[in-house]
Amino acid sequence: MEPEPQLNAHNKQEYPPMHTAEHILNQTMGRLFGCERSRNTHIERKKSKCDYTLSPAPSPEQIQEIENEVNRVISENLPVTIEFVSRQNVPEGVDLSKLPEDASETLRIVRIGNYDVCACIGQHVTNTSEIGRFKIISTDYQNDTLRIRFKLEA
Image (cartoon, helix red, strand yellow):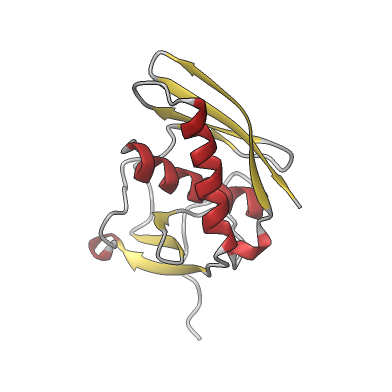
């Protein structure tokens, strides 16, 4: 077995179920609204928030659709896998725009089944069955920014 490549240091200790749910939420937002992954994220064990650039504001029905879709994906019990690739072999659709300038040549790619693929050095579950139920607590919309606050329930 080959040793894991040396990556940049990671300064956060995310709660793996919440961090994986955030990846699913990001992909869901892109699929439903065509927006980019969250531009500002705060992930904690009890509750988390993500900000999306979006116009116009989503309706209450669309907010419910976000929650329903994230829970649908979670319920599929998808494997969460990790692979290491060079910058020249990044899978199609992986956005590297948020990588720090000093990011290593080798990147860690996290896949959630066939639903999401993203460069990430954070901690994740090994299967979406470990996440629990995703619940949107509240939303705010100002200046083309949608803030979603969410938690996980057992």
